[in-house]
Length: 252
Image (tube, rainbow, N blue to C red; front, side, top):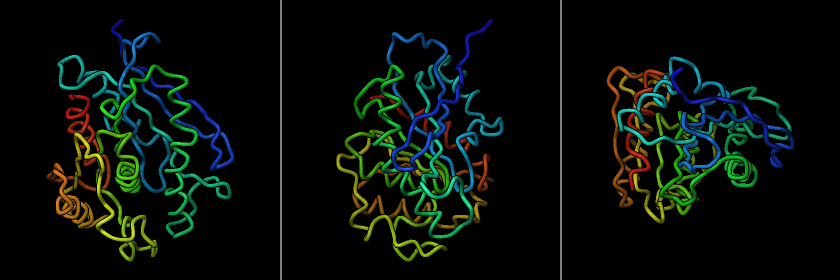
């Protein structure tokens, strides 16, 4: 029988959410607990869960099986956490500022509990040259925020259809802004790969992917712009984004 990647759901205790929190982990076909692998964190969107990225339409498992065989991408451990982080709400209850801030709290949870859990339980190659983060929609906004605020940890940052809210006054739920000004959106050190993807027919996030790309380029970053013809705010954009991003990372 052909060796394939394995997917398993794990649970870690989040001190931020004050509960056991699920996380899906894909392990490479060759994983035997001795060799170390680079790690990619993938963050889901608003309303979704850690299972959204594992659905067949996204094609992640097929890509993880096929791409290393042809040398297009490296074997990697892929971590897909549940990023709605609240000690009051068990799940997202609406598109409003209360719920939006719960997604923002994942940035605390990620470094306080998730990453320590992953590094303790799996054979992870350390160093920013072996660590990547990307996401979709709200998860893409969080991946940009986490990538900028922890640039020393993540060497590769991706965002597919990033949602508004990185800056104040540009969010339908009146988010105060994760950054107060465009001048704060600077990676230091710069990522090896910084990619933003946008779907041609995505009317959900509108022009925000392009806005973020222009700000980052103005701030001196060589942002890869990935425009997806026919892509909407669903797997039609996520699937090609993940393929292009995984193809580009861990090549340093």
